[in-house]
Amino acid sequence: MDKKIQTYKKLFSSSFYISIFIIGGGYVAIPLLQKRFVEELGWIEKDEMSDLIAISQSSPGSVAVNTVIAIGYKIAGFSGALCALIGSVLPSLILIMIIQRCYELFIGNEYIGALFKGMNCAVAAIMVDVVLTMGKESIKSLKYFSLPLMIGTFVLVYIFNINPAFVVIGCIIIGILVGIIANKNKEVK
Image 1 (cartoon, rainbow, N blue to C red):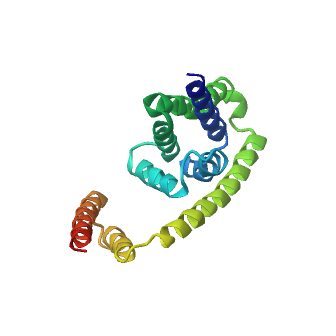
Image 2: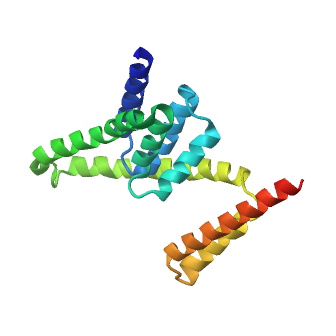
Image 3: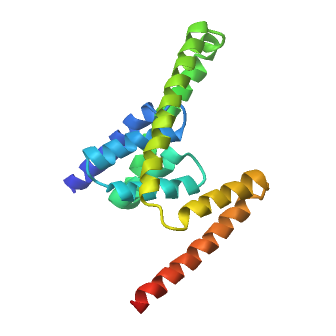
């Protein structure tokens, strides 16, 4: 039982700590989550982390919170997901309560405005790092159909203005068909 409690404490404290530093959106948390849970704690493999992030991106809500929930569930089931969830949302709730109490002091303060402009620059740099890191991992694992599928998706959505929901459904169908074909090829060999 003591080991479970230690696991819950680490999930909560890690999620809480990371959540404090993700000003700028959930994608800022990805390198921090990867460093903590993959490199430092060794609870999750690098490939598995990429899969959890992909699943979290496809779920509604913040990618950071969704990823933390997925990590917590993977490590310690429902209780782990709950600990990670509470740890990840608590800093934001505390900050919102503080800002709500001090709103009149913050509004129009030029120093606070300069602070947020500086944070925007830092967030932009972190986002570039996330895109490059995830891009390298994605390119390494590309299959023969992935690149044309990505280009086709881009063309359908941005050039022909096809509803992204239809494109996602089409990609799901393509993925299922490719999976069926791959399984049949394995059976033949």
